Image (tube, rainbow, N blue to C red; front, side):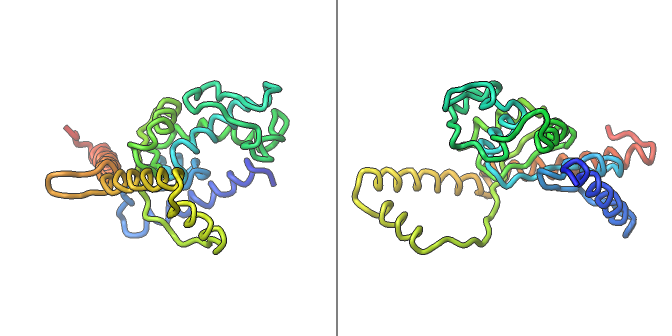
Length: 240
């Protein structure tokens, strides 16, 4: 079964699930948040009058490069080892060694390529895109996604998860960062800067709200506004 067929099967199950949730206690969910590769959930949510958002655990810059690479396949149109993304030159030059095996095999007759060409434009059907990043350190990628999709793209800092890293890798990085080399000192300085930027983004005080907190409030306000509008239409009342 190819990617498109799998997506259609998932959409069928998703429609059934959302319908059951919608009818469960007589109240609609405030919103539906789906993974990047379940963009079809936007159509399902909208059929039920529910706000839909996509969440991407990748940063804005990485997602922007991935999006542009699959839609344009720039490495297929040059013999150079370095190339630019035609609709995202701000990203700078990329090297062929950064291209995944799947992208190396991409082309108009490749099933995965056909899937992305058909699927990625549908991301614009969502009401909002939530990115696991901080606005201040990921502006270039966020600006690209806003420009291409034409929907609100918000930077929401996720809280992280558990993962495994080998001991030798940790020791190698610790020795580099904690050492007295110029590179070690520079890494410590940058780490402190990023730490403060992330800390500022998550501040939620009476007189100050960080960018991530503001983004979360914007997300929930947009979802509530859609729910209120849907209720007004259903009851025949004006939302003014």
